[in-house]
Image 1 (tube, helix red, strand yellow):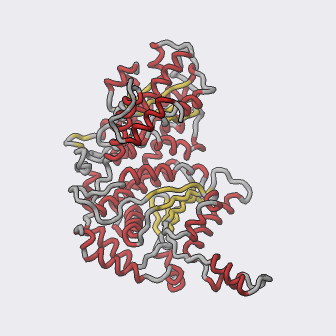
Image 2 (tube, helix red, strand yellow):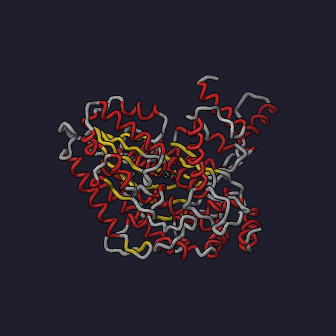
Image 3 (cartoon, protein in one colour):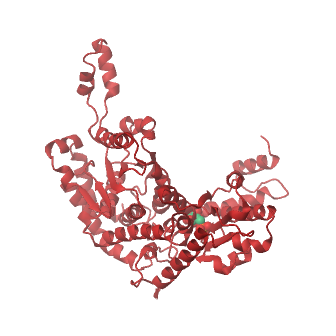
Amino acid sequence: MTQLTQSATWQQLATHTAALPHMRELFEKNDQRFNAMHLKSCGLLLDYSKNRVNEETLALLFKLANEAQLTDKIAGMFSGDIINNTEQRAVLHTALRSKASQTINAEGQNIVPEVQQTLAKMAEFVEQVQSGQWTGYTGKAITDIVSIGIGGSFLGPKIVTQALRPYWKGLNCHFVANVDATSICEKLKGLNAETTLFVMSSKSFGTQETLTNTLSAKEWFLAQGASQQDVAQHFVAVTSNVAKATEFGMDANNIFPMWDWVGGRYSLWSAIGLPIALVIGMDNFKELLSGAFDMDQHFQQAPLEHNMPVIMGMLSVLYSNFHGAQSHVILTYDHYLRGLPAYFQQLDMESNGKSVTLNGTAVDYSTGPVIWGGEGTNGQHAYHQLLHQGTALIPADFILPLQSHNPLGEHHNQLASNCFGQTQALMQGRTYEEALAEMSSSKLDDAQKQLIAKHKVMTGNKPSNTLLMDKLTPPTLGALIALYEHRTFVQGIIWQINSFDQWGVELGKVLGNDVLDRIGAENDAQALDCSSNSLINLYRQGQI
Ligand SMILES: O=P(O)(O)OC[C@H]1O[C@](O)(CO)[C@@H](O)[C@@H]1O
């Protein structure tokens, strides 16, 4: 057993959680439960009262957090400690939303001035493109941005741009990530090369999908009548590999920097967010940063007991390690936030999908759960069935802005009612007696009623958090995303894992390239396992 699972607090949590009454009972006995278990900060309200906790559970969870020296670890991340120990890097995405007056050192150097310079460069570029001063090769203003990237260099900009649709300033934005040619071909259909600007985002400038898509975009651009020297006007890059980007044909002035101390899935706050800024404007982009900054302050300063990311992170630990939960669902009751579950999936699963501790010991407890989800109310007519009556325990986060950007008749009342109704149903469930009573006026005979009642029973006691905001705005979105970033960090600290590397994903890249060589080779593949050899050879034949 590891020290963690042997610890007295861990053992106490195991005993305590097994004996905790049903949430229905906890609510019946305490009508102040919401008052005691909600928290407001950074434009967000977290109601965590519908969780399998009482004061003692929370006290034990905070004890566990203290034993993991969570407060010191938070301070360490913000001050640039090399916490990504396998890549020997600091983890300073928080510096990207810092104030100009701050000093934050990475490897002994204050990085705030570079961050500010990059923001200024972005602001200048955004202004030029939005105002029409930056023109395409025939002198026309830019109308469309095509953002090419993958993973962290794609999903953040895409989801944020989608979420902030009401703040768009006039430019259209299209995102290409998949190496499947269908993606880029479909996106380019209908675009005019004269008015299209490509933003190539790749920290390494070496990711196969992004390079291939960018080269295809360039070929398309040249095929439309543009020349090689027009490339610089239509292709800009965000990368830490300036040499490779200039080799590609980009003007060194149009290359926006990235740094080793920013992980891909934490990078939307950097120049990787350039497509966001082009679409919503630099002022709104800065508001997004300021919402995240507020959450950073809260995370660093609030006591653990009143700290939103800490509470959410520790609740996740509770369900993963003491209730056997293998997954966690994120349900956004806002159409603009429909992409957020996928973003949080990347954030959490790439960060906490680990099975050895920082010092290489195999864990003997569950780490990151599967994160999934979708938009309410659609899921209620599909997979919510399993949430209510399936055998797996799946903690849920419900996210709802109180005011809609599109107030229309009864829509928002219905949306909110569904959101609250779901959390209530999950918590209280329906007993056999209640199910039977509901059928009292039915003409069915008793045996049939009893049978159906059994099928209608919902055990309840299913945990959920509800996150509210007044309205979805750049700062509330910034705070919301930073909240989940820090929640992910908290879990990683308790589990003693490195939340900032991704060796599994890296292996996939290497093997993919190896297979590509074999697909293009002259002779049939033979050196791999028989399944891989056969699949490659079938592919070479082009038919089964
Ligand atoms: O920005 P790059 O270097 O193209 O990498 C893209 C993505 O690839 C990964 O390294 C792994 O897929 C992600 O972490 C990263 O965001």
